[in-house]
Length: 273
Image (cartoon, rainbow, N blue to C red; front, side, top):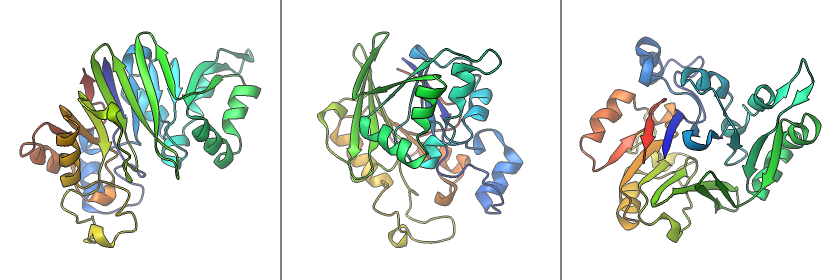
């Protein structure tokens, strides 16, 4: 399998608009891997895009993604949904008023959440424009790749993806991984892509993680290491890296040297399994 991190940022891009923090200022000066667009993954083998943050069209251009046949959204948060308009360009010709729908896959409860929170957008793109074919599912097989959709948090309907081809397995658990629900499907994963919060418990303005309102939604580095060891995961890649964590690309590259097969994502990161 060949996958690519299209965007490695969190709920706000880096550099974030109007932000004058050190992380954003450094990103403006250095560019490249110091910049992060919204969270998204591309599975090259099946031309599948997972999640559509607001800047997904820009991200796809940057990463030279020229074809999308399949699409999925993990949950209804704005940083995963608000770029859904990309399907208009992919699946509909406004001049000829002709549609060529692409496949949209998601858990039924996620589809309901997206429609409820975004003015029935999936119904509009499916039933009116016809640029997507909406499939409610917890499993799909596309060209010898199996994908299981696991609802890790039924209170918020957060999807984890278990992506398998032959004996290779990738788990994509991009956002709000806590409370973490045990699943035997995670054992012996080749690459586990997941989010965490600041590795040292200090956020960009000096706030301690223990005092932050989202302290119970994201993993610390120590918790990630325990999960890696328990599930016998070969490699972990951290994504959904937010400006609020207060750490730059350069910082994470140095931290990687101290860790055992735990890497930090950047926009355009290629993953071959």
